[in-house]
Image 1 (spheres, helix red, strand yellow):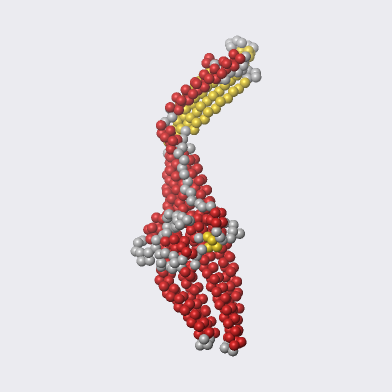
Image 2 (cartoon, one colour; image 1 turned 180 degrees about the vertical axis):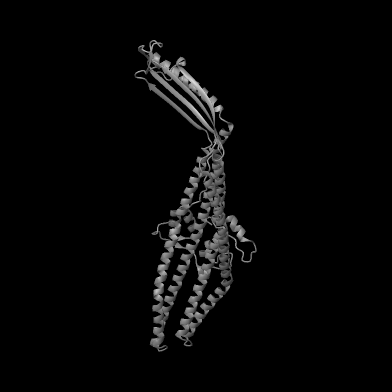
Length: 517
């Protein structure tokens, strides 16, 4: 028994050596082009990824959130960006899958059959006598072994080779979609952040108005007791205070809503508490540097993309080259061109090559792996298969017509996108120019309103003025503060929209500032 085992191992070793030699000779017959294709696709393709920062670290280190930090939180957590990243990873797999249509298809099979009862054929004992009795002759052996190695290689199929280039363009389209989505999210973050600032500023101004009215009411009641004013002056302040208190409540709810909208864009839970940094009334639109620490990050983001009020360059050309929506349409147009070529290639013949290497063995009695040399045979075949499409109905011609119509539709979409870009750029430029031109006047009006309110208060305290003068001065001051804050908000919002309109968005198309700066 031990000797029999040794023989089986030696036979198995011999068979494997023989198999390896034949496999090596078979691989040598595969074209060098196929090997090079395999080498190219075996190199991993890295997907574009967004540089993310730990959200928990940003929100837990302190309770305030700067604009640069808010943008990084949005890049790390926004669901639309994550979905675009998943689409890009799928595009990577599509590229890999496209290569499979031109790589060789290698299949190895092996089988064993044990004949419990041998099949028989019946032959007449005397072939010349039709009435001769039949004789049963067993056929085959107890053990049957089969092994096969087949390699099939596409030599020419136009649609397959076009599919490879199409998959790469599809990946470029998904990468561009990720860039466009990121641009949109950064812009939405900036706008939501500015909305919180303007809501907070309106709340601050409304609270200051109520506080001033409460102080005036207290002082007027004291003057009433001293006989310096009449009851009507006190009544005026009380009416004005009652009118302003509901507006204070509305401003508080407006701040809460603005924070919720910002959290949605950031992709963080609504129960996360933080405050934003910035002071719109202290922001200087025309200055290159921030006048206070609170506006430092806002000014930094503002300066990351250039804007010249009197520039003569054609920004529409820049937008055509950089805008995400236009570039997506361009890549879709490239995909459609390749689709048209792929449909046309279906009219061409295809050529494939196949190679088969097989083993078959039969033996009686106790089975040994693939028998011995006397009971094992090997076969090899090589073939070429040419397929010529002659007539397959009208599906191919209809698909070609549909693809050409869709290409014209994409060209029309691009023209519409360029027209929309011109309008968006022009509108953003006008809003920016208006804010820049009115900034000095708004600043001067704010300073004059503050001085006028202080003088009205001093005149009332010295008995030279009336409560009506103080009320009017207070209303003018509040109006000037609201107008200045609104002007700054309009400028920052228009700048964010302008950056997106021309396709140059901070943190997407520029270097990202460090949080430690």
